[in-house]
Length: 90
Image 1 (tube, helix red, strand yellow):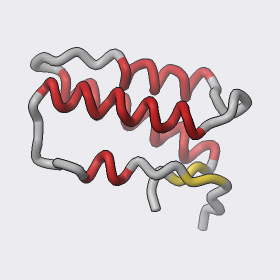
Image 2 (cartoon, rainbow, N blue to C red):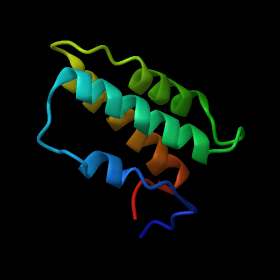
Image 3 (tube, rainbow, N blue to C red):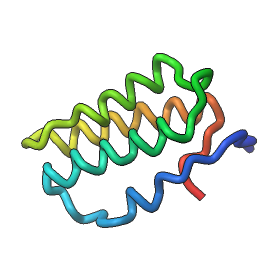
């Protein structure tokens, strides 16, 4: 079983309105998650993989691909978290 060395709780953001697929909402949630993670990580933790995932979350454009872009960026964030043993929820 993995030993998590840090927790960043993004679950309240993700659970706020799980059925809302509006591109404007999805883009805003991406930016909110990126801001929360940036505020909760040190400079040493901000690897290229993390910064790339956060940039992708921040750069989601409201449009037909917003949900797919969000899911892809979130998958990158979870990959980083798994590698660095960061739990993204409580």
